[in-house]
Length: 163
Image 1 (cartoon, rainbow, N blue to C red):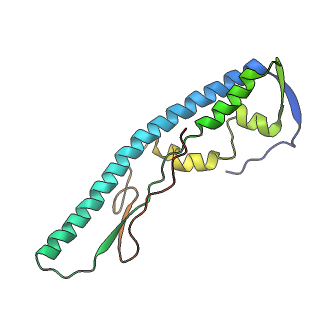
Image 2: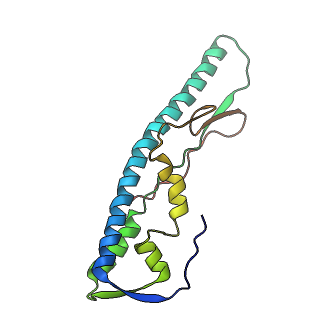
């Protein structure tokens, strides 16, 4: 979804209100991330088990004398990503300022208050895809498992950025 923003202008806000909202946003983010990690582990384990079964079937066939084209097993589950450090830095900055009121640009307001960070789309894809819908399956088995003949060995998605 494309973010339509106001022209970048600054306004003054109560520091404690901004801090409270930012802390609530971080608590929700951490809870979503932890749920996503649990569901990711469940889905990843299921994907590896399906892949292993495919490989075991090939081993059995080869031992029984079959001549076959070997199928590679690929894993394409995105790894959940945590941006807790981003929240933590913003919270610490607000906690350490001596000002009672702070000025936020419209871009900062979107991040701190509306929880609309520039990384939000990636977060929705990599992390929130595991919340509320674990165990999704596709035509080849658990989500993220595919098999084909030839090609390189399988790979696993993005790296985790958790603190």
